Amino acid sequence: MNRNLSVVTLLLLMVLFSCGKNDEACRLDEDILNQELTVEIVRLEDEFFKAEKAADYLYLLEQYPEFTDEYLQADLYPDLTSLSEELVQVHQDSALRVLYDSVALEFADISEIEQELEQAFKYIKHYFPEFQVPKVYTFVSGFNSDLIVTEELIVIGLDYYLPIEHTFQPDMARYMADRYESRYLVPMIVTAISSRFNEINPQDNTLLAEMIYYGKAYHFTKAIMPCTSDQFIIGYTPEVIAETFDNEEFIWSHFVQNELLYETNPFEIRKYIGEAPFTDAISTKAPGRIGRWLGWNIVDDYRFNQEVSLDELMANPNAEQIFRQSGYRPRPPQ
Image (tube, helix red, strand yellow):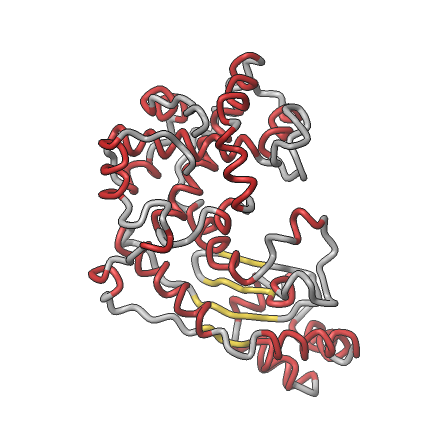
């Protein structure tokens, strides 16, 4: 982070996170990586595109019941036979087959994704022993579903993660589509998994509560993937991250002067938390989701200053307490 840190604080950061923000010097914890845990991604798109008859699809639907229920939403059909007959028609579509061929070429080897996911699962298991490794599938949905993460399974719509310059692109705004590349994939999954450990107070509907919730989510992801650049966790480019830190005092003063922390109007909250190309309430140069970014800074300070463990942090539903005990103050630009 582009902050003026004292030597003591810097040393503390280095102790808590072996690599901190210096990704080039990062080293993963070998004791954590030596756990007996393996991840094997099943390439379901290959099996579904090789199928030819309704009976073939019916067999696949019965073989992968979690995928059938969660991803293909079998409950929307009268029975599995009806779904299998529709799948025959869908997979005969020439455009979808061209898309599948593109995905097969681009993701011929997904061993790097598999390894990164396995390392992340080992870190989660280290901090949260109750974590059970889900089944992991890939698929080509024709841009119908990008990512599903439940306790039992993860389904990755690989078509969403084609390179940004590829002919096939999902129908979404560019500022969001820029984050749909393979380097963002595992951090997205880990951030989604964080929600099952991220305790909240359902009665607290303030902007501050939203900020802390996302701050805990991003902090979790960084702890689980300590060698991953912040860019791939929050989705800001390195240039935007640097500029945002340079303007942290100005951004924070906007929140304070406008008494935003305890705002409960959902339309106001969305201005600072929701997806947008920029936060125009502050400036057209302020990136969208700026409240999430501020929440991450507050949570970082809370954990460093209070020296709580990751599981203790995630189990704390008290956003007000986290904020007050963080001692958060924006740092002046370097």
